[in-house]
Amino acid sequence: MNEKIDKPAAGVKRTGQKAAAKPSGGKAARRPAPRRPAIPYTAAEIAEIFRRFSVQRPEPESELEHSNPFTLLVAVVLSAQATDAGVNKATRALFAAADDPQAMATLGEDAIREHIKTIGLFRNKAKNVAALSRALVENHGGEVPNDRTALEALPGVGRKTANVVLNVAFGEETLAVDTHIFRIGNRLHIAPGRTPDEVEANLLKVIPQPYRRHAHHWLILHGRYVCKARKPDCGACVIADLCRAEVKTADVPAPLTPLPPGPPVAARPA
Image 1 (cartoon, rainbow, N blue to C red):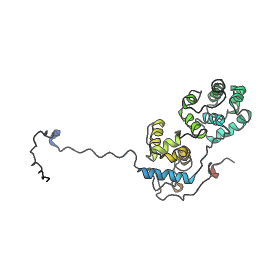
Image 2 (image 1 turned 90 degrees about the horizontal axis):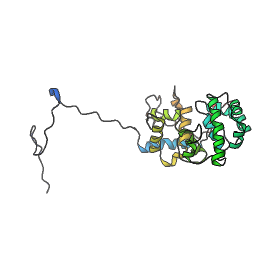
Image 3 (image 1 turned 180 degrees about the horizontal axis):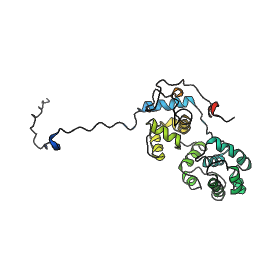
């Protein structure tokens, strides 16, 4: 039989119980405000967000034009602080002249520089493209390695570039955090972080496994064409009802219909 234990009278402490510390000034102690969850979504809501992205773009594609892992690697290196459209315009002639490491190394830094001089930081990028081409020939048999450490050892290749190549060329479940994904992770509070690496790690923690393969492209395309930096187009957002961003202006999601894998028609160069 369970016995009822009476509470001690006010001001009376039980044996072995420490007296509560009195706050200075004689005022009652204030309880700390409850902490808000870092991610204001349930697992089911996050799964639904990415399910909708998967319906909208079942097979998303990189907007950087490439024909093989090497041309993809070069295009991603060139895309730093440059638009995909600008990179594509420059690489069409470049890749027509050299689309493998040996041909690019033979082409040489000066010729590479002439092809890409319309891209920002083109001098340093030309140097890196020539150097990484030589490194691939000398150290990897002219093949782009399917290995993060080997990729990041190449001139001009960092974690973000390696993630793109591993994901697009080799189908790995990596996630490269560019300015769009960094903004989405923090604005929507789905994966807040102070650095791209933090946002990447937090996204990989919450994105359900079936969606990790294409999450990189879904988030980039959503940030580039819908959840834009200056003025989000909430009327075109398929997750408007789920979104927790303070800046959102709509609660009704846009119709969930499949879109072409590339950029919207209005955003494509003439």
